[in-house]
Image 1: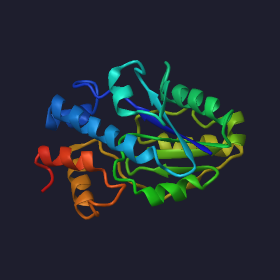
Image 2: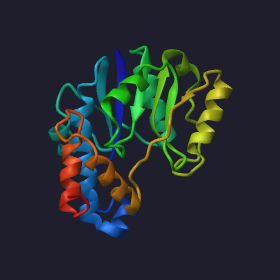
Image 3: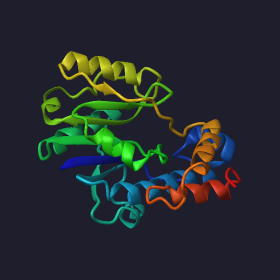
Amino acid sequence: MIALLLFGKRPAPGRVKTRLARALGDENAAALAAAFLSDAARRYRAVPGTVPILAADEPGDPFWAATFAPPWRIEDQGGGDLGERLRRAFDRELAAHPKAAAIGSDHPALPADELGRFLAEDNAVWPTLDGGYAAIVLSRPARRALPFERIDWSTDRVLAQTLERAVESGLPLTRWTPTADVDEPADVDRLARELAARDAASPDFPRDTWNALRLLGRAP
């Protein structure tokens, strides 16, 4: 089994999606973030061969228990920068599972079949167009040298530095075709166009995200 870690931040107005909030407003940006998390909870709980784990910033908040019911297991991200939080989660889960993967909550359009193929890799990274990455999967041998140190998080150098750390550790990462995340107003419009071309009846269609986009007037 693969430990599938979703890193989530409680979607309170004013503390999530701050770049989007400049265009959409704090309440709308938070509503969109909540929709991303709701879709992630539904879609990733059923990925074959995985154990779904939420790494929450405030694990005791009622939002998490209401949204991430079992089989989700809720864990505390803990303190420190993102690298420290990733290292802590991977160290814990690789002690119990042969592989672990982390995925962000800003990628509601990732198709389930493609995610399944990605998780079949031993060590791989799924880049984003802005120089970061949407997901990373590591096998147990990576536990001895996890590639999360000396990274300039929240910059366009994250992917390049992560690849460098992986090479230094002797576990180079397979690099997947880049995908997009949702951080800027233009990303919202791109997401709406992408979802409009998808089958809304598909089990992996992010329906809460679609409904949120419609309420924002960004989707038909």
